[in-house]
Amino acid sequence: MNLDELTSVYIFGAQSRALTLKGYLDCLAPHCAIIGFLVGDDDKNPKKIGKIPVINILENPPGATDVPVLIATKGIHHERISSLLKESGVRQIVPVTPKLENRLRNSYIKRVFRETNCDIPFLEETDLSKIPTAHIQPVVYMVRSIYDLPMETRRDIPGYMQIIQGGAALTDMHIAPLRDDDGANISLLNRQFNENTVLYWIWRNTADPWVGLCHYRRWFTLSPETVRAIPNTGFDVILPSPTLAQPSVSESFSVRHGAEHWEFMVNWLKSHMPGYYATAAKLFCGAEYFGNLYFPCNMFIAKREVMDGYCEWLFPILAAVAENGGEKDDAYENRYIGTISERLLTLYFMHNREKIRIALADKRFYS
Image (cartoon, rainbow, N blue to C red; front, top):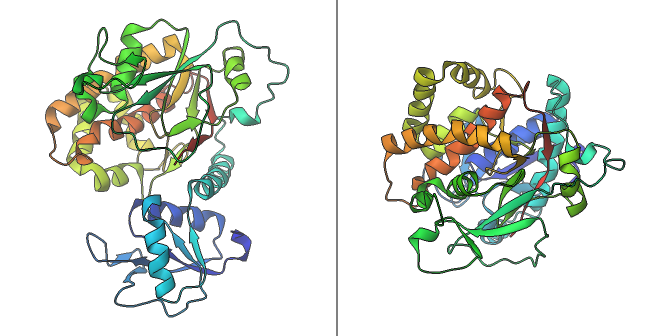
């Protein structure tokens, strides 16, 4: 997809992915008009997004069938939506795949960083040719669970990764050599805390000088040679390249995961950590730093003391939010602790960016 050649498009979808895509297009292709947001039903969809109409394609098929339609939904729905669009006469259908989304996101990030004078570097753009392999090797723990979906892509697990089972205390099944219910643990909280139960286990039960966390479907796009050189780069932590939240980090979370959880978290910071609250007030509304971006997926590679400081700060907040919010019947809604921690990871490292040297690395979503 050549953005320079786009003059008008439809976006299929009207939720977070569609709003994010609109943000990318507004920045990278301001000459391109978004005619409307197409949906297949009216369930929980707004009537308009800004001034742009949300159109039920079942009731009002798009008249301009030569206008490209960009599918901005979960990938599992792309095939069904493509068939629906073809039946409606649409001839140009562009699913926003993880590869395309990565390309748009990275172009957007680099422009925003340039315009806001953000000086956080990308590790991929750092000259590592003269940096020797470190004597101390990072250990990155990859989280698996019994709910993992089958992988379409075959992957070789690099030597620096250790596979660990998250939520192991909730099942009799053993699927990994390491388990997050050994030693000091909060494994029973995995349905709410997600990969943070593994983070807690790493914090309390390991002594690796450099540690990291990733997910069975979300990896850093770093070669083993690059990972081995990280301790000698001078960076203290590697974080995933940020993602865009529209219309802001706070509003996006509140709409998708519950305003009550967000409001409680913010008020807790105000009472217990006023310095972080002041940073959050600017960061999460896009008023300062780098706009409506946050570091997703609870991924990192960091010095042990950096991870320790982060965990000591993070888990009291998560415990307070979980105690206030309680358990949810819906499995997705019950994961609000895992999703709020992504925003808190962003808050912690942006608040401490003068003391902790940060670099970014791209990530890959495997299907």
